Image (cartoon, rainbow, N blue to C red; front, side, top):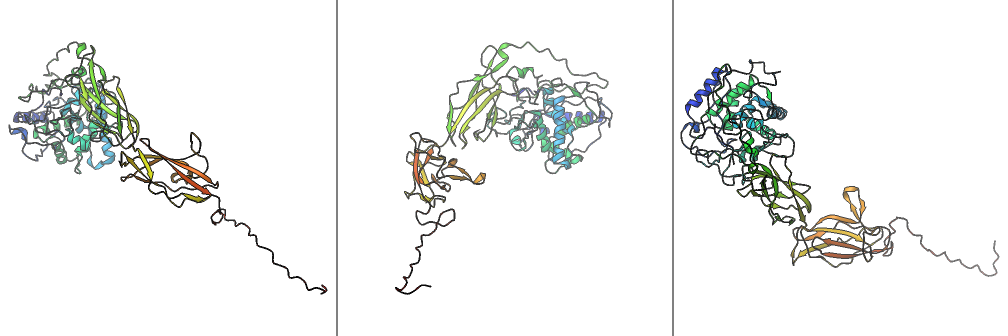
Length: 581
């Protein structure tokens, strides 16, 4: 479930005082005044439940109202070559900062006209998640456990029914904003990106989320160097004037300069947790929709004195609360016929150091290997939370048309713990009978091709067997036949007509029939055998007869005519008694 959003604005609970404080902070920090662009009345200022709205990236979910310190980190125009140490409040964790800058460069390479500044991503990341919970990410930039917003069930927040079957947010009934940039699943499905090149689009990864946010903000041919376009972009992310003012305040603050701090050392808004509560294997409980969390304290005082309360020490970790790993929870053999769903569902169990079950642990299931198999909806990876009994079951796994073995891995998301590997097998569509469509004799002369094609039909239990894999092999006439090295052959069209005597990439059509490629004869006469086999055990042996060249009056294939036996002309006998010359 979600970490607590103690300092977030609840829908219907925002007051004009918040907006006033934001504007005051802008003025006090020396930020230039901006004209706010309002597309419509701010639903947060109405005091009523807003209408459903999933057109915004976050679904207009809550956000943090913390404002930047009034003392800026540096003077305007001197934001380069800044020191690498400083206050945690003004610093940005190393991996988070790197992700923002990489996203800026990537977008600049494909949409230079947008002029996306990384400081805008930093401002939104600060307001949405406190820079990924103070930079608590692993070496790949993935949060140690998902950052989830409150359930968008219409009680104090927008009403957005489930769009991802709980794959990203663990909630199959309603959506929740997910990750350091707080995308709702339906928006992530459209805008999700692979920012770190690992082949996945993970909203819990700061590189993926930052790039997705950048492309989302640039939508509609916006030029973010223009104040109006920038305001419209921020409002499209979360449609609230107060939100815009808060993001603007951090944007101007970061433009004046910031510095890099180590991952995991950033300031975390109270209520979100310092990360250790999530590392125990279970996230903090969600906030009650009946009212907002603790009020946000004012910005830091000029000159350094902060109004932030001193955090209480973290209590010792109990073994029963510490995730020890995940294990197979009784998953049986995983086998399926091509195109069918696997009857068995993959199930894992999260356990603590005492061996007991651990609830609300994020588990990621990934399909790996050379296979067309995928989870329901065509997904190669899904992330879900364990239930009260510590178990979680993956969605239905569906086989593709490609037969063979592959692996499904289940791992505690973002943890350096061993994965559970499940071996799965896809078998080809079966046929228990295969027969020729006609019984015409197949005969040709040496050095020519067979005039008649071989056509067969496959059935399974009397019904048409479509999509059945068929292997065709020219075999010897031995007790245990093997591939023949002489006689009839096929041509490999992908290898400049190379001679082949076994074909393995054949499949019956929708009507169960298959027409083999042309068959050629070499120069050796004789009677040969072609064997066809299918998945399911069906076998058909066909006789191929090659006659000697010229046996049927056909010219020798070499092109040299045989000499004819023409008789010598008869000689006329000379007349008797007639002298010769």
